[in-house]
Image (tube, rainbow, N blue to C red):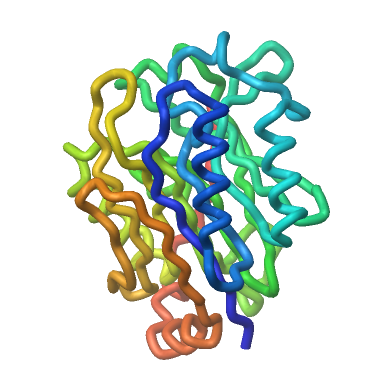
Length: 271
């Protein structure tokens, strides 16, 4: 059965300093000493969680996207993480999924963090991004999305699919700038999303203090489909960690505990 090797990068982001952040993250990627297939960076990895998109946003052909494409091609890896993108006069907290051949998928953060004013500066997305790699179905999400289980929830019978042919997410990835003072919620919800979806879950957070004086403890985690913690890194330290996931183990758990068969059918109506 298919395995998938993924590297998470928990980094201390330099506030609104794209050049320093890209240099620092490239050094982290260069330090990976084993073969990996996907590298996951935090939310707004080039700037930190800034509410100044008018000054910091890039186009889809801008320098940070170009950096991602060049690095993905050079390392023969998929690179994902979110950054500030301007398109059509709107600003997006956009997660990019960059393939080694330069192809790019993207997801615009659906749930904007109104508590920090994100909804006043950015436009919410309306479409999920489900990536497919080596037979794995990967649902890609951003930070505050974690608090809203319906957006993360899979249905065993999506529209048009027969009940005997379920389409289930195998892995959910959340990239974040989640404050340390709410780390308990972060860790608890990552485990909850794994349990309810019977999926692997990766949460990649930043560390360090941002330009608003908000501290981030990291607490990046990898969670198994029964909610078990496979790896975590707190204490505010940077970390580069690589883990190999096995699809056969996931399928075995779903066969032993087929809770997904009893899930409610639902449709999301966006407003």
